Image (cartoon, rainbow, N blue to C red):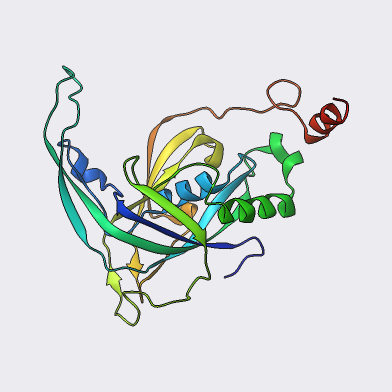
Length: 240
């Protein structure tokens, strides 16, 4: 389904690490073979985001072959501050096409005055053309990424015409208190299937496995206290 405020972007980089939580117990990290919903949402938020709305990732297309590369890493031990030795398994030479749209965050009625779809859509497209407002990371800080506009489905992908590939139980993402209205931070899991190199994401509320992490309180925004209206800023600039 296409949305009026849908955007398509190409995400690429030399390395990526979409960590499988199961592999992190012993201090080592191993990447999923494809990006998680939450990682792609984070990339979109680095491009442009405000608490007024939430990005919804619709689908991702894997453009390059899935290849891994292991590296010896010397992380710092938490107990004594000395170095340890771990093996991190990264994805190498990654490239994805992503299609997403944004929806108003109904759990933030305090920001209802900022729900101007044309404004946010225009800013999002402008920021995408400039490579994003903030640095783009592919799963972790050491994996620098880049984004640019694209036409979803254009060009040849490495897995075009391949049969469906079940990817097993996989982390979908994290739901924060200001997105759920439950006062809980939650983690979500699902079972994705890649068809012709494309993974169509289920919506966060449709994930079959959801687990509460801990209680969390959403920050409130009030004009005049910790937020200023555009009209006030405009008047201030005009009188300078």
